[in-house]
Structures are given as C-alpha cells and as structure tokens.
Image 1: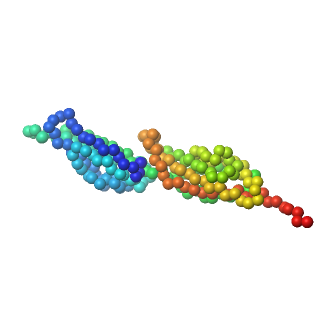
Image 2: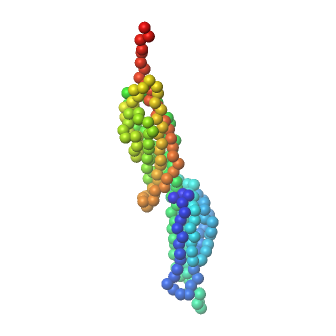
Image 3: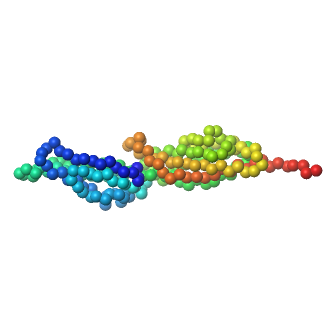
Amino acid sequence: CSGGTSILVNLDSDTSPVDISWSIDPSLYPTITGINQLSGTTVIPAFTLSNSGSTPVDLIFSAEAVTTSAGSCPGSPVFYTITVNPAAEMDAVNNFVYCNGENTQEITFSTSITDGTTEYNWVIDTNIGLSPLTGTGPIPSFTAENITNEPIIATVTVDPVFSNVTDPTVECDGVQRTFTITINPSPQITNTE
C-alpha cells in the first residue's frame, strides 16, 4: 500500500561462482516516490514507497547473474515485481437535512480510483432512525426520527478501504471523510392561555 514498506529480497544463484546485480529505472514510475537505491548486488532492500496516482503500479526490478570464471557468461535476467497500491480515497459528501418522519435518500460513496475495489465502512454517532448505526457500502434509505424539540445532528464517519483486483487480500486504508445528517423536529403548537 502507498506509504508501506516492501520486503527485502535476497538474491542467490545455484551456479557458482557468480556476480549478481539488480537495477530499476525510477523514471518509468512517475507517481512513485521512495525508490532511494537504483542498483545493487545480492539484496534488493526494503523500500518505503508512496503512490500518488489513482491506479496500482507494478515496479519491475531486473536481476542478472554473470559467472566470474573464465568467459564471464551472463545468465538470463530475472524480474521481480513490487506492486504499490494507491491509498484508498473517496469523494467528499455533502451534508443532509431532513424533517422528522421524512424518508431519506440512499447515500452512496464514490472515488476517483478506477482500478480495484474501494469499500466504504461507515459509522453514525447518533440514533436518527437508522439501525444499525454501522455498515459497509451505501447508507440505505430510512425514515428520519427526531422526537425531541431540537434538531439532532448526527456525524457520519466513513473509512474507505482499497483492494487491488490482482490481490484482493491486500487492503489499503485511506483518509476518513465525515459529513452530517441533521434531523429537524416536527413543529409543535403550544397553547399559551
């Protein structure tokens, strides 16, 4: 995930004696930062990588072994891939205002990330007629409820989670979004006599 650290890769060869070298061209990956070593020998180090784009990026490391005996015979290159997923993100959501007893609309969430899947986990901090107060995906339509004499303002917190279609077991968190749902009370007339 963007902001995460890759694992260290040890390179070895069954052929002996050999010199092993690896390299990567960071200019091929303009949305990736954190490639702080461009080549090396027997170890591809761990990198803390960030993806500022909206799609997963596969970093390709090329490794090659060359015999050190007479003749210096090169082996076929071997490629190692590190996939850097973007952080989950979601578009802003406007605040909503309803009256007591009014049917709300379904609230859907969206993102600019086009590859993979983004799941939206939400929590509402105050009872406003919807049960349960947590869920995943869109917030369903419900009948707004406020039996008090004052508006109830509920804060909704949404956590987006991104997963790549090639490896859906890797889940990347993103920045929480919040918005409010206000439920106004039913107006009452009181007799002042």
